[in-house]
Image 1: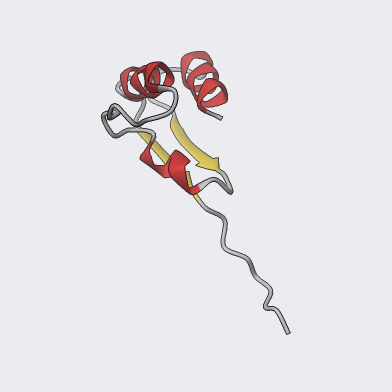
Image 2 (image 1 turned 45 degrees about the horizontal axis):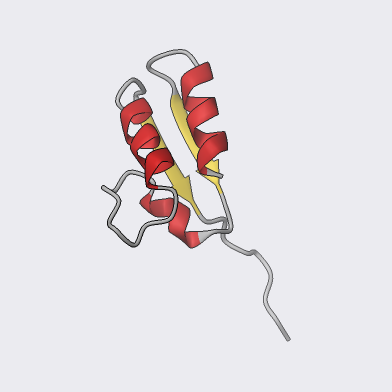
Amino acid sequence: MFTLMVNVMNELPEGSGIVFLTNAAYIQNYDKTPTPKSANPDLILQCIEAKGIHKSISAQLPIASWSRV
C-alpha cells in the first residue's frame, strides 16, 4: 500500500487533494516518522516527502454501512 501511495503522490499534479481508502489501520500513520519497529521505513519516509507537494492527503478507513445480526 505504501508503494501505491508513493506512486500516486508522485504522479498526480502538485497541489492535489488525495484521499486513500484502506482497510489497514496502520496506513493511517503514513505521515508519522518511522520507529525502529516500523515496517517499510523507507517507504514511509517517501510518503512524508511526497506529502509536502500536495494540498491535502489523508488515509481513511471506510465505515461499514451494515450491521451484523
